[in-house]
Length: 347
Ligand code: SF4
Image 1 (spheres, protein in one colour):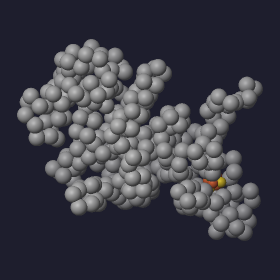
Image 2 (image 1 turned 45 degrees about the vertical axis):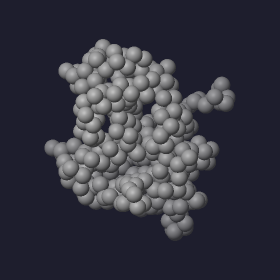
Image 3 (image 1 turned 60 degrees about the vertical axis):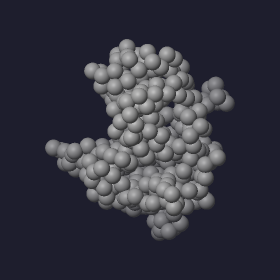
């Protein structure tokens, strides 16, 4: 069993902005979370909340119009003597050190494998490229490792898949190939960005089951980015809920589902069906929609949609993350005693 108390990744006060023709888009405005070794962290939220940009920052692969303007990502790498803290966000994205970390230490799988796999090259060529980039092996060993990687993700006839082009495979097989490429160099941290969203439910269940088995086998840490709370319930130990570029709640999986504190997390949970639901219960929708990141509301960013809005406080003051229990942090004035006791506050 992995040591769950040892930190592998720290994301601290991360701010990432994009410069567009219509102005500055503040995609991340102070993202904080911690991931422990061997843990599976779900990062959830609606589209546009900054989940994928957070993943790009961890990989130090922010698109050209974007820039990390503040904060840091620290990766704790194990070596012979213990662990070494590497500030990923301080490394040049194309440096030798960053290329070594990407792939050898941290790997990523994406939502749509067809846009990540090159249609002009066979699966085998693409796997060999990843292996040769990160491992010092000869051609025969590289081929053996590649076939083994395909076998490990339970692809039948791995030699045939090795010689196939991506268009000759089904969506589920392509996603298995992406997982094989990501795991071919045995990373200690895997970032999975909506890896099952483009798949039908049966294939989705098979891919989730495969990822769970691989996590049990390797004890790697996983950041699972998704908007699907069902996937979170199935896969994760810990959950960070994001809203408009900030983490608004982080805690363990049971607390997230049974005792969530943030009104946004509560609203997300009320909007999904449950097996024990009363048949007559109508699913609730969260009022309004996620505002454009170029025009962020004042005070608490969730206040225009929040059913618990505190007049005179929530629209004026931005809440900070407060610890409400051990291992449970919430960004909401309801739990910040200094804010909710302000004169003029009306629940
Ligand atoms: Fe709602 Fe206020 Fe809490 Fe924001 S700070 S989530 S508006 S109660």
